[in-house]
Amino acid sequence: MTARPHQHASPLFSRLGVRRRWVYLCGLVWSYGLLAALLTGCRVGPDFSRPALPIPDQWQSDSELVGVGSTVESHELAWWQALNSPQLDHIVANLETQNYSLWEAAERINEARAQRRATQTQRFPTFSSDAA
Image (tube, rainbow, N blue to C red; front, side):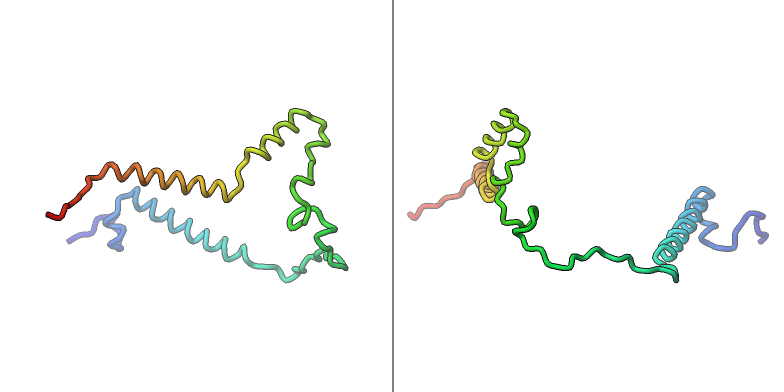
């Protein structure tokens, strides 16, 4: 039996077509290239020095800060009133009276789910029996 001139010794390449071989080889190149990039990207040079962080000398309490964790209530931070817009004041007033809290919104979702379950049970047949 004579070998064909373009026949590869590997059984993998002999079963694959030319296009599939090309895709296979490209996948190998990309995977090895990605592995090399990941391994070299994690390397830190010998002249690396950790940057200095600005740390305050004294702890600041919540009363000194306005923001996350502050004791200032949201209605006390009336930032929109500085804009002197009656329309914006009206919108914020409506939001404060008509907006639901998170607990109320969750309860409305639970109520809607219960109503859906009640209406879906009417689709199924009912069984009953009487004692004779």
